[in-house]
Amino acid sequence: MVDPDKIGRFGLGFCSIFHITDVPSFISGTQISFFDPHETNLPNKKRGVKGNFVRDNLGAKYPRQFESYNIFGFNEKKEYPSTLFRFPLRSKPSTISQRVYTNELISKLFEDLVV
Image (cartoon, rainbow, N blue to C red):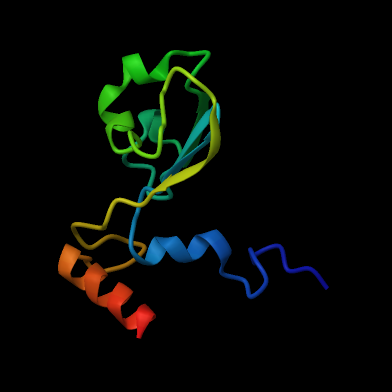
């Protein structure tokens, strides 16, 4: 039986990222996508938006949104052959989670994963 409320093998999948961030985004190919379940950060209180950053010249229109993607050879004027994720750390409590993540806490989480 398929459960429509579950994503991934154990029902977490991508949704698990909401433990540390409220507005994840990613770039893949020529597409950029933003998710905003609170409907507070995107225009017109949308829960998500997707756009073609090459065709629509989004890098020139929204340069600050693309700054963090300028790694691993990414160029906002060309198709990107892989996928880049951006998970800005939650800086204040939200409806999704009251937990705030600092750089130190994230470093500790990564250390615990390695051990």
